[in-house]
Image 1 (tube, rainbow, N blue to C red):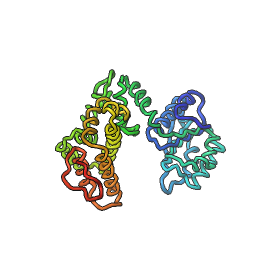
Image 2 (image 1 turned 90 degrees about the vertical axis):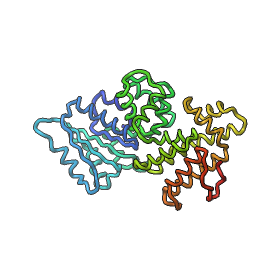
Image 3 (image 1 turned 90 degrees about the horizontal axis):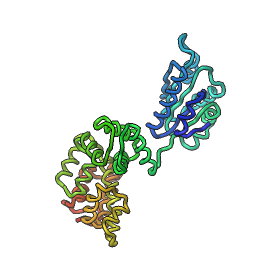
Length: 347
């Protein structure tokens, strides 16, 4: 039987199935679904748990041995099988099919796995688990689902976020739900329950990182070249990798290019910002940069991003950090070196 993650808690209020298989590439939601199964098992007196982690060379005979190795003091047992790759191999597939065909009494098998490709989801061992118990495939949340998810998680902790606070947190974590939960925990620890606005979220992130890629982006948009260089050097010194810095800059540049293009057609800045769904506290930064940089300059900066990306991947010569410095200075309105790679000047 297949269930959606949101259907699992209700199912667990009744009689437990002998097998639960939870698979997905969202670590937090897979972990929380598995935690729900473990909690329900404890409530129904599965008093012992044995964890088996499938690594290279794993002996699948250990699965049968674990089922038969009940202690004198525990009549019911949970076997917690971790399958990170989602690939049990032929021996594992046979062992899981055999278990599914005749699940041991008083033993619950919980399997957690990484994402399965479509073909693997149709394999005989997955189908056998489906017939024997419950299968939960955890899919990543869609972009339009994230704000509701974040808002609900914040309210669980007694926080009352404004829509802008939710939107900012969604932006900052970029779909990383585990990071999002950690930030919500920080908010709760630092300010307790009650209202939360975007200013509070921004201050929290700044307080927990000496050098911050989002601070770098904001400084460059504001035209503060000196501070941007200090932050960039700080990020490099703290061990930040170039692709993360590039990701933050490129994401903002795509929004900036859309706003600048709209403004160039005669659209009012406020309307262009609203059309690009820029939240209120960032409108001044994006609006100022859009008036300072025309569409051609924005396109040149995006091409520069593409060139740095190739350098990061070893597909083009050059130093990503040196090029990031040039990119940040150009975004700040300072162009120290001529562009020799076939892109038009930015300023």
